[in-house]
Amino acid sequence: MPTPRWFFYLLPLVAWLPGCSGADFVNSMVPREGYRVVKDLAYGTEPRQQLDVYIPDAAPASLPTVLFLYGGGWTAGSKADYLFVGEAFAARGYAVVIADYRLYPEVRYPAFLEDNAAAVAWVKRRMAAETGTAPNALYLVGHSAGAYNAAMLTLDARWLAAQNMRACDTVDAFVGLAGPYDFRPLTGRSLPAIFGGPSPAGVMPLDHVVGSPPPMLLISGLNDTTVRPANSRNLAAKARAAGGEVEEKYYPDIGHIWLAGSLGAPLQHMAPTLNDIDAFLKARPRGGCAP
Image (tube, rainbow, N blue to C red; front, side, top):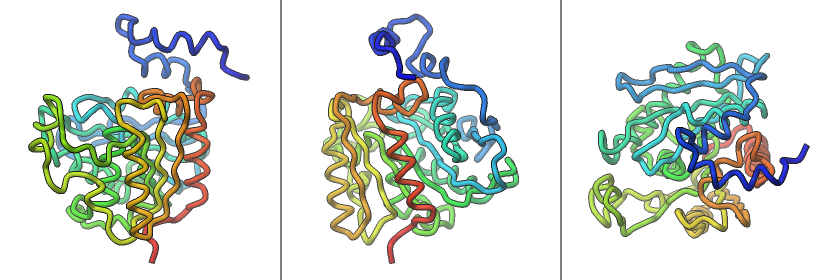
């Protein structure tokens, strides 16, 4: 049944509702059946080093697994806000891991990447024992700052190497939604503090495209004025030049926040985001790097 037109007129009003965020609004309409959630599993010793796992009902002993990294400018975010993402991918047959990670001002670069790499290690080494479901493929999916984080784990060998892992053996594919992949010079009050200056070296995913990376799907909304679609175009061009497999999707009339929101069941008519990701991942049951 199509989403009624009045629903979309309400979306801009959500931010003005006292005590209500866009995530609250979307999550309030997400189905609560068809999956179970194992909450607050620790992948480290810090309070924000915890994750939730969404597992479809009647799931087999092993499933393709999405590790979703949310955005928030490295200063905000909570796994509790992303029920709509967990439900969306679980409904398509994936196990879904949504991980919190430490944020500025508690930490600065690269601590959030170290946390994300530790979450990857948890999925590969401990998920089966702690949830009863093993990952038979691992896909990194991120939005905004989370897409940056996922891209860095995929492209910059240092972070998974610290967990004795290699991206080519660990990451079957990477999906970036509105990712900032090369946004120097860093402006504003927080970004230079987070990354160590206005033009720090070696901190951008575009700096680390070497060899043939795992398959990538890069998605942007053409109305995104927060992270320009050129970020996706530039990373795609450099990855292809290095021999990588890359698909690009650009959606008209979609901005930064609602690109992520369009994953949720009540908003999936806004853009084919979930369908495109699902088709891309199901075509790559095992990915990794090309020989």
